[in-house]
Image 1 (cartoon, rainbow, N blue to C red):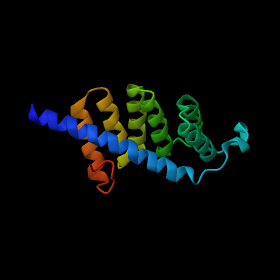
Image 2: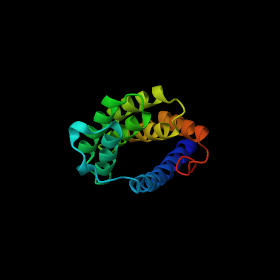
Image 3: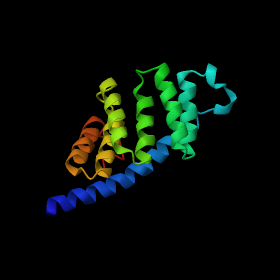
Length: 152
């Protein structure tokens, strides 16, 4: 019982740090973005769809952002970052099962993707599957011990 209490407290603290870290990562990426409305949809590259999706994600427009990430994936289905961001939107909408499916696709492309394992842990935590959450979060830490959000 004490071990479960410690794990739950650890997960709560971890999730708080994840939210803070994710916000910092988004702000850093956003500094490099250009105005997504300047490129017509038909001629956008996968990177431009990604940038548009990031901008929409920043605004909390997750459904719209998901469409852009899906378009980026349709152009370049081997870029795990696009799957990461699609899964992030699904997670924010509490569509955990769908997010887990997308995260698993990201991990099939990049098995050492610590961000995907961190998001997987958060999704499992949201589904109250604590053992799976802990396992995924431990994997994130083992892959990237310097990741401040995964390491606390």
